[in-house]
Image (cartoon, rainbow, N blue to C red; front, side):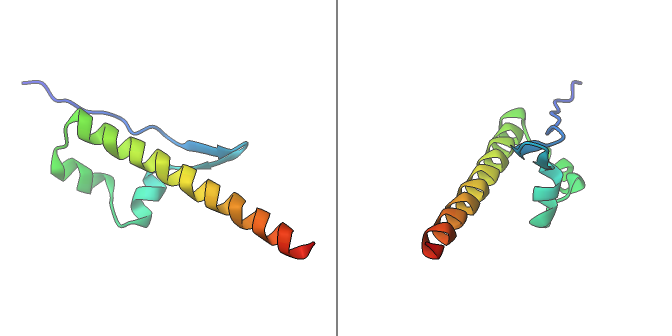
Amino acid sequence: MYKISIRIGTCLVTRLNKSASYWTVLNHYGISDSDLKKLNLSYEELFEIYKTIKQHEQVREFLKNLKEKISLTTKE
């Protein structure tokens, strides 16, 4: 019997020298690696989680930059 598995990488780079671990993001929402193992997810499902976390980090970065732009505008 074969076992399908995927490693969710070590980190996402959101800015130069600033990264967020995939596991940190998952743990923030109360999801551990053992929780994922219990689900016995397919490669496609794990890849969907990976893509979602990547989008999550992109949205956070976008909103952070937007907040900075707004604060710069209000100071002028």
